[in-house]
Image: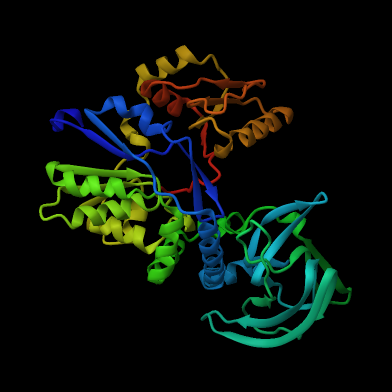
Length: 474
């Protein structure tokens, strides 16, 4: 960029470390010690502004409302995939379930007020086991879903549950093609310092299925202990099978959210700085181009809006932090800001084709590395100079911090070695937690120049996508 501009300045919110809070919000810590502070010497001028914070009671209030909206959206979001889920011969979780938790060495899941299963055709009994703090009424409705998406109610049942419960419901015969969906609803409550609307704590869900043979009836038991991933991880199998459909559904879902829901999310997620927006309004017209690159989700939309209000706005380019297949990144206000800018940079041409007017997006190489740069012998030799591995290896690129999941990668690599697979592991990135990295066949190289990274990318057998939040198509 230097040859193209006479000066390059930086304006940023002074945040050092962000952590998620109540799903939708984030806690800002270590003001003054963030990435912008480490790179500010690269700029001709750098100005920093303190973030505007929201009180914790207000954050809790808004997060509880947003979680109710989020859960209510899931049934419609996953409806087009019911036929894929219905191909299984066991119950499958569809919507309304929070992430797995360990209780007394057993994996259980809290439900929301409404939760839904797909169950095998021919199921004669549905059983649920779990716990609730107070007496609640459990309502069940059974539907047959036709291939055109229409639903026909097959039956319903009501039963009270309290404390530890194990209840079974007789199901009417299910004939015809299409998946069978069991919708459940129950009163919700809130625990202290927990934003989630909690229904019941499930430990098992099972069906009794008639196989229609002389052998009689067989039993298929699905304890939730066998389903230890959250809903998004459970359903990644078909996100990738029909990527365009999934992106289209996320896009449509985001664009029909109400203004009040969008405003609530922007309020608690931030980061906000009225002082930064005032600075942009005062100085923005003095620049030829403003590149908006920032953490989601308020910085980009607010700054685009500020620049668009100027009499003579500069060229506005957005480089968003956007995980293209992750539901959490689809918000109407965020998507609209991409289209209001002069151009938005994305790394995936497929995502660019699907989320809005194609002419508003410019696709650039992911990670800043073009395919023709791979295979450079000089880069390969530079990598070999700093890493002594001769065996095949997997590569991890990114900050060494627990939130990136590198510890899980180390355990997975150790398991491969224990099973006789002679493969090494190379990690490259800044050391943020200071924890030692050891193990047979493990090489932690710390920060490395771009040339070494290019060599490692060419030499590795595979790149490990280690962030717990990282999507497949940013």
